[in-house]
Length: 291
Image (tube, rainbow, N blue to C red; front, top):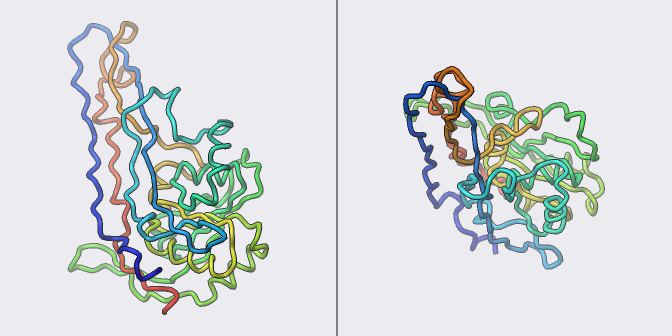
């Protein structure tokens, strides 16, 4: 079955667009309010069963599907598909879907971690944590479930600047042959351990780790779609939501002394034009099982 899986890099990511708001008309007095509209991105991964007893996440095509940010839809109060603490309906929905659904996006993954006691297993190389970022080293005070964050590299590597492509590239890759042994030391109860597996973008190493842990006998394992790159766009180091997806507009009313964001004179194109690097990891990682 593995040979029939499609190449995880054989697709293109739709270009994200940022809508520039209309410039405000001249007005004597104005204040600015923000209205965000969002609806959940529709994510329907094709889940391939690796074992007849359990549909774990994972064909390479499932994690290769491009993450979609939420777009226009219901108002903030009615937004669907976003995780918020205490949303029992959403939490119960996620509890019913996993681990059989197998691939969790950044909203589902946060719910699994914060509400359903799934631990995060970061399998990136040490240099990625140092240069790109890491999951929280300390859990927030309101984190009450018995889950944690662990780092066990699947493949070690270092970086060097390659002038031919004008960026840093991964070199000196080496498979961690003790990967399963280290996981078994952290999670000795294979039947009950709950693990979210995260690499950089969820398209390569996370799949390899899912396959390896499945073969080792782990049952409740889930891959994180978009990996750390998409997670960190949504959640900051203290597990707070960075910004709500949606469209923003300026609303002019009486009550302030100038135009612009919070009466500063600045338009939204200057305040909300977030720029993100490509979420995809384009490095050619070696195959752990055959290395």
